[in-house]
Image 1: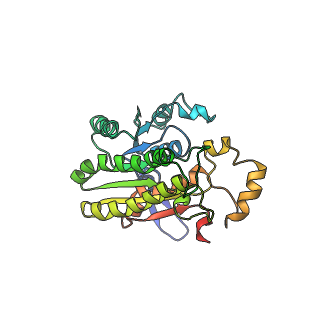
Image 2 (image 1 turned 60 degrees about the vertical axis):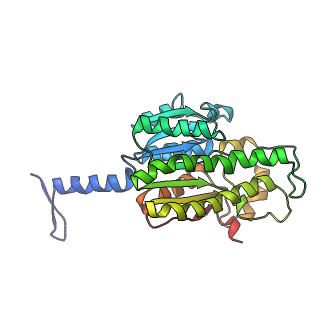
Image 3 (image 1 turned 180 degrees about the vertical axis):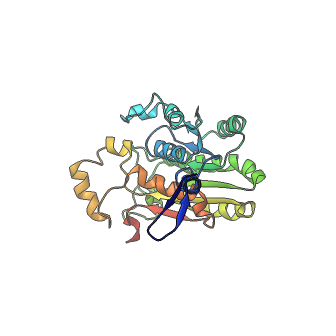
Length: 294
């Protein structure tokens, strides 16, 4: 048995150090070990960042996306052939499932397959959605019904579908962490009356989060959301957000004076997915460098 002493006279047995390291690893490096996370829109961008971040923390991951090869579209550099393979390379179990989350029957099938494969779903990250560039009118008084219904469907309706689909299993388990993804666009009007479909859809996610949290709280299920701001996702970069011109225009509007990264959002998802947030529910956390605070 090897014993170490320090200058203060305290003695440590080697086995004690090993025990401390094991506890530290489980608490800080593998805080989600034994958990299963379902992440929609997980094949690229912010969703992929959440997938890899939670896998590094020990979670097994169900990667749901309408296109499991989506990362290639925006030139993301994967460390393996697919995001699923990236998860496996991190030492975790991963499965990719192609699904259109606006289709409720498809979402029910997704959850059933996830439960059949892993036996549980502890964490849901509702990341699928977005604001596609369009020539359609975006003004609040003029936006066309077909366009705003589409934007509502891929954001708000899809979120509701996934929350409802996992609720029964989480109720039975008397635990669960649901993390919806809204946007800073859902927290402010922009003062110009534009962008109505996306802003209203994301605002709906914020309030749906609160209502669902009130319902599911007695079952030990936490429901929260994040509201990303101006983030350098692969799609945003492809659309020019990382250009010098865009940075010069956008960064002075942000109190922290920089654009966000996918990892900035993933760290907040970690907080909401782990026991660090065990007394937090019904909340929306902006991840925007202070943009919506002023």
